[in-house]
Structure formats: C-alpha cells, structure tokens
Length: 199
Ligand SMILES: [Fe+2]
Image 1 (cartoon, protein in one colour):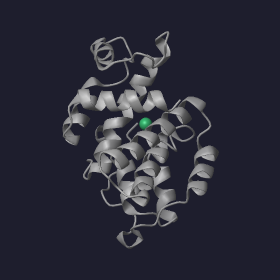
Image 2 (cartoon, rainbow, N blue to C red; image 1 turned 45 degrees about the horizontal axis):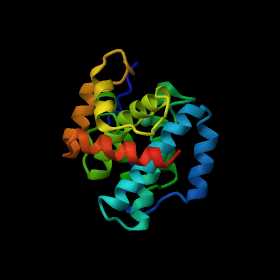
Image 3 (cartoon, rainbow, N blue to C red; image 1 turned 30 degrees about the vertical axis):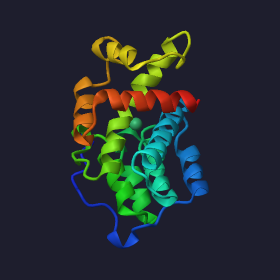
C-alpha cells in the first residue's frame, strides 16, 4: 500500500491565516478519531507543537494555535481510513479553505511515507515530535513511576534497544532531528518535560 501523496501543493495561498476554531477542531477530532490511544498521541503532539511555538519560537497566540492545530489533526484519518492516511484529512481541510501551511505540515509529517519534505520550522517540528513523542510515552507506561525521574539517558537507552517500540524507526528519528537542526538530547529533554507536565 502506497501512501504517497503525489503532490506538493495543498490548498490555496489566498487562505493564509484561515484556521479552524478550537471548537470546530475538537469536534472534528472527536468524531474522526475513535481510538483512545491515538487520541492521546495526537493531543500530546498538539501540546508539544503549541509549547514549542510559544517557548522556543516566540510566536503569537494565533501562530501557536496554527502549530497546535497541525499537531492535533496530523493523524486524524489514521484511525478510520488508514489506506487514505493524510489524503482524507488534507482534502477535508482544503474543502474548508484552511491555511495551506496546516495541510503542508500534515503532508510532510512522514516524508518517507508521503513523499513530501518538511520545509518550514512548523513542518520540521511536527516530523521531529511525531515518532519520538510516542516512543517516550510508551517508555513512561513501562516505568513504575511513569514520567517521574525519567531522563534523557534512559530514553536514549530505549532508543538503542531494538526490541523496544520495534516499529519506530531510529533512523527516522535522527533524520527528523537533523532536519530540524536540533540535537536529539534537546528534543528528548523537551518532550519528557512537557509530556510529564501534561498528563
Ligand atoms: Fe502521529
């Protein structure tokens, strides 16, 4: 099954700044995503995107929401329409005349799967957070104390263990960090601290 999108342009540039309201985004989220584990993953990535935009990029509230929205909806069609993953949510957002950057971020969250490279920093951070966030969350579930006392060293140990979260590509995680211009340690430390505070 190929998930290649076979296109690089999404939506119409004249829709710049047009975002869903929080209410509309949450209605879409809860009607499309029925799997509670996937909901947790998407909410975690949304939170990471928002806090990164605010704390590391110094963006205003509208821009923070754009980042959060991209994280919130990046896997919206994975649950019910896995063979149309990315296609369905992008087409839906296009029909609502949403800002092209939101669709581009969603389209580039897995460049090896969808064939679209992350371009701006929002794209790159979504790619960087996606798999690593899930791996760190899986690690927290296995630890007796959850996120308590979790450190970068422990996460890196799990990354070296091939049998742990075996379906998560370590090469992809490193590639994503490189594209974002970040050390893996920086990324891990940020995710651990934000996810531990947001449970
Ligand atoms: Fe994801």
